[in-house]
Image 1 (spheres, rainbow, N blue to C red):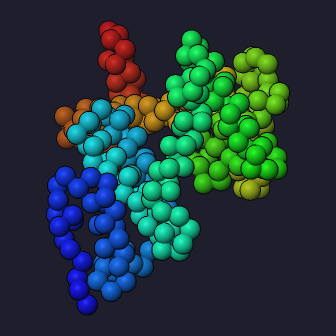
Image 2: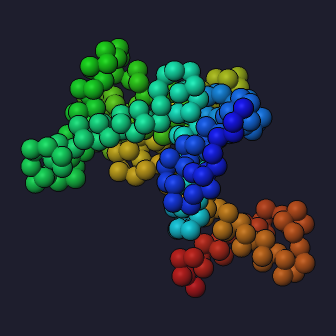
Amino acid sequence: MTRPSNDIVHDPDGGIERLLEIMRRLRDPDAGCPWDIEQDFSTIAPYTIEEAYEVADAIEREAWEELRGELGDLLFQSVFHAQMAEEKGLFSFHDVAKTMSDKMVARHPHVFGSESRDKSADQQTEDWETIKAQERAAKDRGGVLDDVALGLPALLRAVKLQKRAARVGFDWPDIGEVLDKVTEETHEVIEARDTLTHDELTEEVGDLLFVLANVARHLGVEPEAALRGANAKFVRRFGGIEAELAKSGKRPEDSDLEEMDALWNEMKRREKGEK
């Protein structure tokens, strides 16, 4: 058997065709990589999600050199899925690119068509959602929420479900009512924590988290970004606690809550520039 040429594989200027050929070679049943050959859509999907989060992490840290590599990793995930689809006769990477290009042209008539660009960003967002709704109707989707992806992170999916329901009028008119609902759900958790089963308590906590996502939506805050920021702040401040304890030769497990809480408050004061 004649082995395929390595010319494009080793061509640094080969672009996307080089990457597609590398993927084809990795999946070659006779000469490819055993690990790559064994994979399918379901086994690769978790890596796809992980790579998307690593892109978001690099952006959060403003690690621009890392971002180039992370975007490459995410692109490779699309190439991997497209190669498996092509092997099954479903579609190719070029079909994916064509579908995306067609979608972007159709959804931006103010750029690629005859519509005026004299619109605010909010108006363009409304137009985008109108076009998406028309596309869903053309696909004969059943309910309003039917195509909100199940595989999304729960917090992101909550906001998407709420936005979709709000478009048909199912929404609180102002933030005050949403905050009242937070109070109500919080009281339900407090009152039920000693009487409900674990499954029932899980449901109540879920209700509370869902309403908190709604608070963020009404305030125009991206809850995923807000929570990432809170996570980063917690890591930073707890690291400060560890550093302060280390000055006296201690570790957190050698301390107690009272001491660590006092150090935590000190970290907060320092960050806010308080004396």
